[in-house]
Figure (cartoon, rainbow, N blue to C red):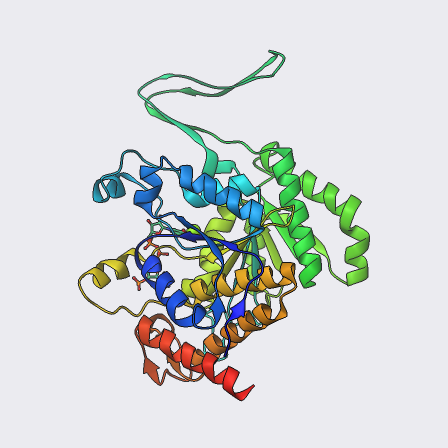
Amino acid sequence: MAKIQMKNAVAELDGDEMTRVLWSVIKEKLLEPFVELKTEYYDLGLKARDDSDDAVTYEAAAAIKRLGVGVKCATITSNAARMQEYSLKHLTPSPNGIIRAELDGTVFRTPVLVSNIHGSVSCWKKPLVLGRHAYGDVYKNCELSVPGPGKAELVFTGADGTELRKTIMEMPGAGIIQGIHNTDKSIESFARSCFLYGLSEKLDVWFATKDTISKTYDGRFKEIFQRIYDTEFKERYKNAGITYFYTLIDDAVARVMRSEGGFLWACKNYDGDVMSDMVASACGSLAMMTSVLVSPDGVFEYEAAHGTVQRHYYRYLKGEKTSTNPVALIFAWTGALAKRAELDGTAELGAFARRLEQATLKTIEDGFMTGDLARIAEPPAKQVLDSWEFIEEIARRLEASYKTA
Ligand code: NAP
Ligand code: MG
C-alpha cells in the first residue's frame, strides 16, 4: 500500500517520561507505516524547556496557531522535586497553562467508550463531555506568604491612574494571600466556544459557578454566559432542540451523578481540572479520556488528559515493559490527523484516522488490553498486554482493515 500523503503539517509537541516513550512507539508502529507524516517538531521535554528558558513552549504555541492543528504529548510541570531530579535552572510554569493562555482556548474532554468497560456510575449511558475554561483563575495566580500580622489589600491602578482599593483581611498573624483574575474577553470566548461546541455536537450545555458566595467574580461568569446565550444562541438552540441550563456548582455536581450523561458540562478552570479527572476515572481509566483545546478562532490542539505516568516510567527505567495504556495518546494523534484532513480536504487521511480509532477499540473489545482496563473489563480480558504488545495488536487490526477493504 502506498503511504497516505499529507498536504499541510501539524505541530508536534513531544513530552516527558512514559508518555514520551509511548509517543515514539505509536509513531513507529501505528502512523509511519501508513502515513508520510508531515509535522513541525518541538521538544517540550522538561530539560529542553529549561535549556531554552521556555522559548520552545512559546514557539510551539505559535506553530499551533500558524498551522491550525497541534498534537501534544504529556509534559512534566516542574516543582522542587523535579528541579533536583533534572538539575533545572529554574522552575518553569506549566506548558499546558502557557499554551492554553496563548490560544485563549477551551478544553473539551470526552471519554472513549468501549462495550466491555462499564463505568462505575451506572446511570451514565452517554459520554459526558467536559468543557474546561483554559485561562486564568488559580492557574495564573499571584500568591504571597506573609510572616505576621498586617493588612492585606486588593489594589487596582487603572491606566489613567485611578485607584480601586479594598481590604481583603486584617491579618491577625502569619498566613497566606492569593490574587487571581479573569478577563471579560476570555470568559466571552469560553462561553462562545462552549455554545458552539454544544450546537455542533447537538448537546445541551450546563454551566455552574459559586455565584452565591463569589457575587462579583463568579457572578461575572454567570452574567456573560447568559448574555451570550440570549443574544447569540437562544434561537439556534431552540431550533436544534437543545437547551442551556445554569445552576450552582454543588447542585450541578449532585445532578451530574444522577444524570444519563450526553451533555456538555462547561466548567471554570479549576472545576474542569478536578471534575474531568473524576469523570475520566468513573468512565474506566484516565487513559481513556480524549482532550482537545479549541480556540475561539478555530485552532485545535489534541492531547491526552492524563500526565506523564511517572510511576510507570520509573519501572520502565528499571527494565520493565509496563502495561501503560496508550489509548488517549493514540486518540490525540487521530484527532489531530482527522482535523488536518478536514481542513485540507484530504479524505484518505481522515479515513485513516477513523480506521486507527476503530482498530484501537476493536482490540479492546476483542479482549486484548492493558492492565488498567483489565481490572474493570466485563467480560474479563482474554489477555493483559504490555504497551508494546497492545500497540502490536492494534497495528495488526489496522493492517487487516486495509487488506479486507
Ligand atoms: P498521571 O500521569 O496522570 O498518572 C497518575 C496515575 O494514573 C498513574 O500512576 C497510573 O496509576 C494512572 N494512569 C495515568 N495514565 C495512565 C495510563 N496511560 N495508563 C495506565 N495508567 C495510567 O499523573 P502523575 O504520574 O501523578 O504525574 C506525572 C507528571 O505528569 C507530573 O509531573 C505532572 O506535572 C504531569 N501532568 C501532565 C499533564 C499534561 O501534560 N497534560 C497532566 C497532568 C499531569 P497506577 O500507577 O496506579 O497504575
Ligand atoms: Mg487534573
